[in-house]
Amino acid sequence: MKSALAIVTVVLGAVATLAQTPPQAPSRDQPRVATIGTAIVTGLVIADDEPREPLRRATVTLSRSGVEDIRAATTDDQGRYVFDHLPAGAYALAASKGAYLSSSYGAPKPGMPGSLVTLAEGETFMAKPISLWRGAVIAGRLTDRYGQPAANGAVDVNQVVMVNGERRRRTGSRTYAMTNAHGEYRIYGLLPGEYLVSSAPPPQAVQAEPTPAELTWASRGAGQVPPPARVFTYAPTIFPGTADAAGGVIITLGRGEQRLGVDFAMQLVPVSRVSGKVIGPDGQPVSGLTVLCSAKNPSPLLPPSGLPISRTSPDGSFVCPQLTPGQYTLAARSTVPVTQGGANRSNLGPPLWALADVTTAGQDIPNVVLRMQSGQQVQGQVVLRATTSSPSLDPTRVQVRLEAGAGAAPIASAAPGTIGPDGALKIDGVVPGPYRVTATAPGGWFLHSAMLAGKNVADVPFDIGAGQDIAGLVVTFSDAQTDLSGALKDGEGRPAPQLYVVVFTTDKTMWLPGSRRVRSVRSTEVGAYAIAGLPPGEYYLCALTELEAALLFEASYLEQLVPSAIKLTIADGEKKRQDLQVGR
Image 1 (spheres, rainbow, N blue to C red):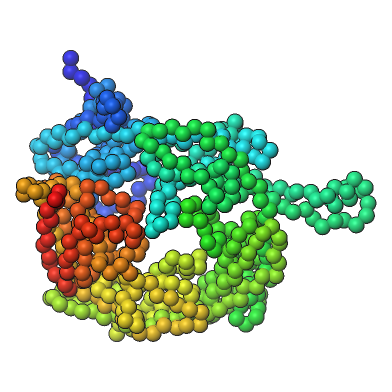
Image 2: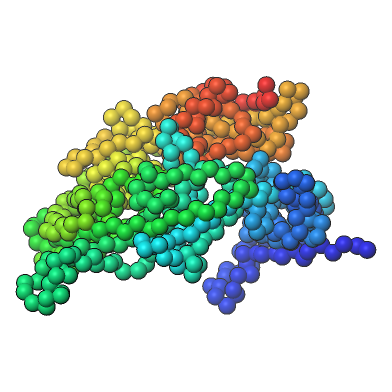
């Protein structure tokens, strides 16, 4: 008897809640995208552990590249799936199931990018089996200070990686679960690796801890009222029960391992109430501003926590309550118009800023003054360097911004620049701190460099100090983009498909997060790769079977790739071909 395969579901962007869809342009103005074709994709989903049995009721998704066309299917009792009536195109294929780790077709292991499946009309593609790893498990019990179950508490698990000799949370690795009425939690679907387990503070109110003087006064019912009790709250707590991330215990998990009994108690710590006023340059209070309070040196092992926020009152006062012990930065930034001295003034010029550092240890800190100052100014020039017959570009259509770097104040958001018809560039209201220049332009123009005092600050950060205006920034665009392409071949000259190609600058000072000079792509099924838009310079180039994408910009990781890489130089606008032989 013919086996029944699961029905394929098609999800197209055009079918989403028609009742809420805004009026569309006439159909003749819309691009025509085929949703039905004659190609077929079929395959099998299996368990990666022995005896590699087929997985029934696994979910398989097929996503067409460049189109909002996502199809889903469920495997049958033999782990099989089929997608039919497919139009020609490139597709991403992935599978998932319950306690298993989701995986993409062609990926060396879970959590890594897969490869595209390119279909022609009428083609039947028999995909290699997609293997799913069983996820690891961490489970335990969370209690309060009295050993009672902490119900409805959030428990976080963050993967830890070694970066440049320091343990650090792996970005995007956070998984969490809520405890039940018995304080129990269970977090599954974890990759092999090292993990830190922590609890988030519960939403309950702070607690007052009566002092002996208060208890004595209460028993007598008379006499002078003693000073108020210290106030406590539950702090983020790291297993096995510490508020200091450095004292947390790392849990190492193997593939599919279950680690039970990870029990710990939340820590109660004293809280501080920080209060003060925001004062304008004219000495008058500033109302209606948001005051942010951020930890100065957050642990690299834990995800960033929310910022306590306060709004200034008509008299400029603010209050940040319930701060746990630590070092904090208070920050405020104005946007015009603001209310200053009780009057609305709409002509105050560029935004103002204020910063103040405080250290808390359970004591209240009153009378903190945040004195607003004028932001700094960055001036320069936008240069358009034409090397081809590209259409001319109006400089006012260029966008130049300052991107805040590591260690910047929480109010140091990206500052946009204004550009005149002559290319004169001006950025006002910049908060002191580290920055890097980012810039875009339409019509086939590309950022070539942003030079300041001999440094390309599109690649390395520069500091703006308090009271320090910057002049002489030259942002250059070119209409000639570089292209690096080639083919990967094995020792016998055959195509080496589905490998990761990494290209990174030989200048280690530019091995920075988000660097334009560190790139990676996946080679196609015929071993081809292409990388466009690299700035001119000298680079390392290598091919990998596996890529730790989360570590791509870390110096210690890139250093490991140097011995297996070749060197090459890319000139302005050069179209360079570089083949690689792999497996040597």
